[in-house]
Each structure stands twice: as structure tokens, then as C-alpha cells.
Image (cartoon, rainbow, N blue to C red; front, side, top):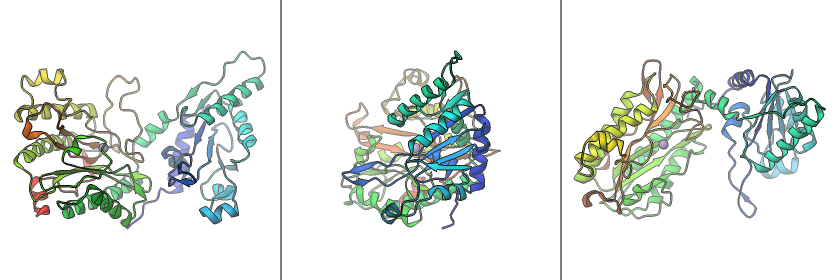
Length: 441
Ligand SMILES: [Mn+2]
């Protein structure tokens, strides 16, 4: 497996871009906390996406301070090397490593809180605003607010108000929304690994198996192909479970009458794919299952075909709603004028979610969905990556015709916008009825 690591050069470029966009201000970013699973066992560590995007550091208890006004604008606060800790948990970067390997202009101990406190106060005194995401860590919020007040007192009697706080996610969201060649290559690897696992699941699933057997097979395929972890909890939902949008129990025994909905994605080097496919647990779709499937496939293919620079996710969603409403009429679930049915959102009990979301380091990646004023949906641009995932869900207790009850289907691919149109990153997994049935038999 060819590996795609974000280079230090690319990270340095990101930091320069970030620093120039926050000029006049100062930014504090926190690492993700180490979280306890139970008693003294920790969950596997994953760095916060924004923190990793800018620093490449995978250690907890770290803080990053960006001060564009300083000759040393990039300071990392990390834990100093500790031989005992290294014995138990592995190599630490340490202060020297933070400078030599990650390109920090300055590396200071994160264990000595006075060091950070003084550095932030100094930086604030040279700045007119603070970039800091409130609400991630209440203890840290309290600390930052207190330091702002202390810095304010240092100013003396100037009548100046305290520093306004901006969310750095606004700047970082815009940066992360447009993927570089390196990021696209990484997403393609995550997509290939995920596509391969979905295709294998489609091939090996048998009546009588439990959903968790498929969940385990997916995880095996991901890890065996070099994926670091799951991009999100796998949904392996058979029969009526597919109507529960965030079903994660994955513990039902499957029968040859069921469809199986799999929504799972591998994370590779901090970038995740997000694929959903549905296939019969028996050899073939039932006539009803096939009809619903074809409706969604039609909507999905038309929505994917719309993807190009200048279009919006809102337009794509609107088109999905139009097609699915027409199909709901054809399936005798709804009746009346399509226009009225859309206006009254009659489709919503059967299509309750959106048609896509940004995709990248986070499965629901950051970045504005609207223009700067949050008025109009933003136009798609080359380098954006998002999902197209229409579906229909006829829960057993819904008002759908009896023969459709218990059917839940979604088809999801990952789309990259290119200069001229789009590229489907996840096209390797079959989605045509004939392809699926031939794989199943
Ligand atoms: Mn998705």
C-alpha cells in the first residue's frame, strides 16, 4: 500500500496561510484530550483534526500558540520527554522533537502552566483579538478567560475592552474545504480501501450471519489494507434496522428476505471515506426492494451528474427531493401534485436527512455551507469533496403501504469537484442491480 503522508512542507504552507489570515490576532488551539474508556483504560488516541492539520502532532496535553506578530509565530507546548512514560506508552516527541520534526519555532513544556500563561499574556498584549474555540474544554476555557483578564490588567488604565474572541474554525474550515493534491490522493486511498471492503462484504454476506460478523469483516479489511481506524462507527443494518438512521448495535441475525445497508468508511492518515451500499442478503432483490432501490439509484445518479463548479449542495438536495417525491408517488406512498408535496415536505417521514455533507479529515467535515453572510448556499469549487447520499426509509410503524414496510435504502458515494466537473472517488463499489445480483449469486 502506497502511503500518503502530509509533508512538513505542506504543513508549513498551511501555517503560513493561517498566520496571514489571523494577522493582528493570536490563536490558541488545543489538542484532543486523552479520554478514559473505563477505570484506568484509555480510548485509543486520535488527535483533533484542526490541531493535526496545522501541527502534525499526535500527542495529547499539547497546546499550539500562533502569534503572527512575533518573530517566532509558531509555539508548541508539549510534554517533555519522560523515560518512564515512554516505557509504558511509547516514544514521545519532547521539546527538541517538536522543533526538529514538526518545525515549531519554539517548544515549551505543557506541564508548567506558568509558561503557557505568560506566553499567552505576552502574545495578547501584541494582539487585538483572540482566535480560540470556546466549549471544547471548559477547564481550559476558564483558564483562557482568566488570562485575558490578567492581560487586560497589564494594560493599565486605557479604557480598552478585553480582546474579542473569534472561532478559528471559520478560517480553518475554509482552508480544509479546498483539498490539495496530497489530500485528494489520501482521500482516494481511504476510498479505495473502503470500496474494497464493501465489495468483499457484498460477496461474502450469507443468510444466518449476524450483522456484527460483517462489521468485523469490514474492520478487518480496513486495517489489513493499512487504514488507521474507522472514520466513524460502522452501520451494518439489516431488514428494518436500516430505517434507524444511526443504528450501531449491529447484532441482528440476517435472513434471506432482508436487505443489508452498510454505511462504513476507513480513515487513512486522518482522512476518511464515507460509503453506503445496500444489497440483498439472499441472492436477489425482492420486486418491492428492487423498485425502491431503483428509485434511489435514479436520484443518486442524477444528483452525482449535477456535481460541477458553480452548482450548490442545496440544488443537489432539492433535485434529490424532487426525484424521490416523484418516486414516492410512483410507489403509491404519496399522492397529489409534486409541487405541493415538496412544499408541505410530505417526503420527510421517508427522506428525513440531507443529500450530502463535506468530507475530509472529519466525516462531517468543517467548512461553511453558505456564503459569507449565511444567506445563499455556496457554489461548489474545484477541490471540494462531499457525499451524495439519497435514501428512502419505510419504517414498520410508518404510513407506507404494507409491502414496503421494513425497507430502508441509501446509496452514498464520495465526490470530488474538478475544474471541469467531478470525479467519483468511490466508484469501485458496485451499485447497479445487475452488478450486485451477479456478485451475490
Ligand atoms: Mn455520509
